[in-house]
Image (cartoon, rainbow, N blue to C red):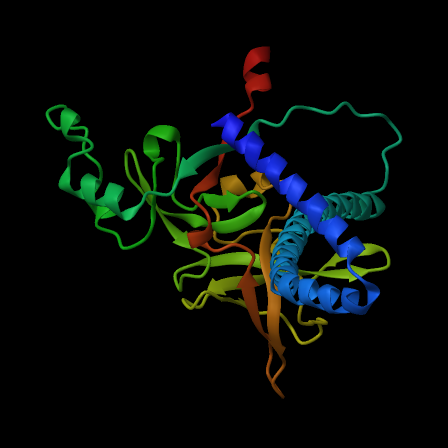
Length: 321
């Protein structure tokens, strides 16, 4: 097989040489005609090759552009997250500075003490429809049926989404759920192994919230209001007085005091958490409050894993005893 291929190649080379010699020896009177014939014969092939190149080049160019767009989007997302972390740090420092201005610095140096109750985040997964169906049928927990290890039927029959953490993990009604630093919702009912949650867009959701305005000195907090779900993928920030300056695009964070949380959870939030952005702001004539519509930063359908904020006794305090 190799010999036949080698022989074909030699013949092709000899044919090319003889063709070149023949064209060279052709009288000048006929050379132009021969040239035109060769050019016309080769033209379809040349056109085809050019078209193939034209097809391949845009495809390669589009692939390179798509890759570049993905890289830029990833860098932009990282930069936005870094900016948000810096903004939160700036807000926290501003609050500490304002408090220091009001109370004044003590003349003596105090020693920082350990807090008794500290926040603690536990990871939880949102259960899918198939898992919930198995739970309702008792197929996932049927091994403990004799010992009374049954999940709360009230939780399982709820139409609200479920997570795979419950009372056995220290979850309680009213505890908040986050995706990163973004508020997702709060615990509605707690079973032994699972809990139902209220998304922030649900009409059953209520939580303290406030506007963060960007100024030359950094972010400034607005007056605390109440964020309620509208049930249509959006929320409304209520009870914001007309003296506040509200604009579309401003960011909304959790309030300083969440009226919907138990009192023993108030001190564990530590820093403001993110809700979303203002997409509509209207102050009707004579109205006592703004009408503010908020678009959540993250919807429940976008996440599979959340964090539940609970409080625990400070382990350092326990070690000192």
